[in-house]
Length: 552
Ligand code: NOJ
Ligand code: CA
Image (cartoon, rainbow, N blue to C red; front, side):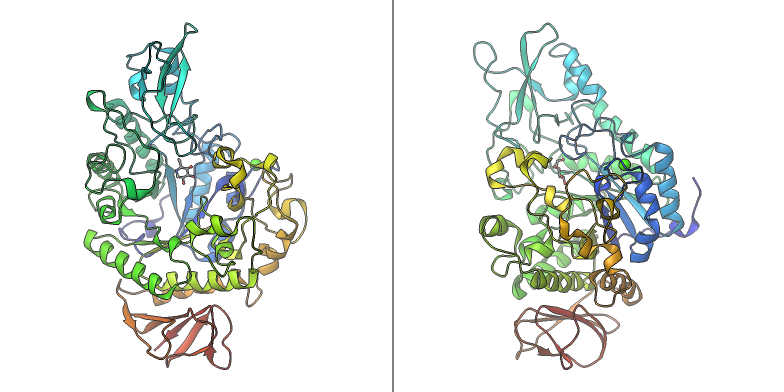
């Protein structure tokens, strides 16, 4: 691995970084089989560089049966052959680093895939064996063990327990899976499991991986002592205890694991960073973000902010204060591979928050794409001005809309198969990117695309927007680069304008002002030089649904 000295030394590179999430199967296809791959990503490094991002976070690229889009990992220290090889992975890191871009890998420690050698060994071994003890196997209740061990639902279906057939052909034990049945949960009370993850972290860190996004970071340790088994039907954070004693999630003991990871992260220069995907009570996030633990924790609060001035301000304040207390920086997220794209959420004037979206709009309303794009861009611009790191999901730089009409037979998401009538699928944000106006799969690759692309895709492609003033792509490029020049200490000051209550205005040290108009009439801008705006100004005023950056 070549050493790039500029990547060394800066321990805090992630604190105010722009991180671009790649969902590898849907980014770019290098060999024309319809599935995105490392070759494809390598060929697009110049594009990534042109965005000005600091790092790429890559969703799982490991061997997987794709029961859950790669979050069912069969081998943590390898690459899915459909995605590439380890040699190509090394080449990708090299290319990224050469271009000043770091790489964050996705670690999935709560569960493996069911084809993992250890799960296969567990199936072949006897109840009570060390092999079974790496996962959570239990006898069923009832005379013949035919009743599941507890009333625990899974995120993808009514039960988190699946019964196996023992090697002798008889119905056997049950294993726990908080997600799909192909995703057996690890037993984190098992030392071998703990050591194997340290090995995985070293494996990728030695290859040059700069950090990790940690999947379901709050679920690893469960209370399984003295025959206890968690029972739960809802995964709403509200039903979770907030004091570290919940029997299923966010237990205090989980931090012992992250402390041991931190020791390994700190063996490297600079220390590897990590960001927790932890759906916990807000008061519990700082522990994941501790410098003795993972170091940063996602805050997904803006997903519920909608287009509401007060809410956005409250969320910003709350998270900036909390991050400061933990010694970390916060994160800003509007979209990812699990969420309806925010350009679509904002395209429905009434309900634009994540939770309410499906209920209100799934089958009824038509998106107002112009409004959605305007608000999405204004909101991204606001978040890019806040202290903290901003996570951007592939395609949002094109103001890509969610694909809402994927036929049922083409769906891949286990969430969809759970309740097909609700249409709850994450596939709509995972449709392969449009690179060109026309052509096979709009430039994604030469051989089609594993999820069907809509006919309008070419009209928002990279080719369509590249170099075009006023396009979302050029706006992102401009903002990300401008942000680098304006970046300053992690402080903000709010400014109130009593005549325009729907104007959200804050500044950062050095005279960097950010003003967003949440109202429906143009508003006079504060004095200063307008550096950028998410839509053209009208007669020198800030139009509705628009953000401007000003130097004052
Ligand atoms: C969160 C991931 O983002 C999601 O895609 C996945 O289904 C679950 N964790 C389970 O790994
Ligand atoms: Ca491919």
